[in-house]
Image 1 (cartoon, rainbow, N blue to C red):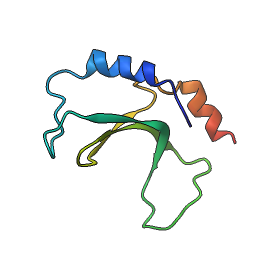
Image 2: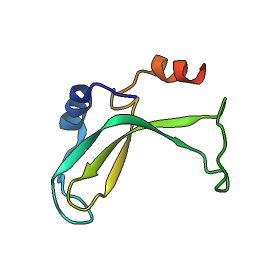
Image 3: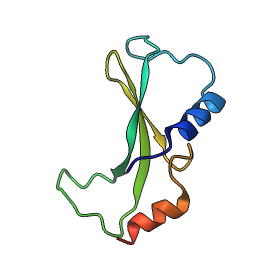
Length: 91
């Protein structure tokens, strides 16, 4: 799912204090990925259809140098509304 990257960038500008250096390679070249992703509970490696199971919607910020990736809760950073996250569960 795509989202408004400007809203997320505004959130990052407001709340990401201190160093923006990658903890792996020390670069500060970050790329905000263009989709909302979901994290699900690990089910022993089996592919499980998660109807009715909770998922965590996240946006990913990736270091352009080494690939280290940081996840942010998509609702907290305003990439996704709570209503939109509930709609996805009703499909």
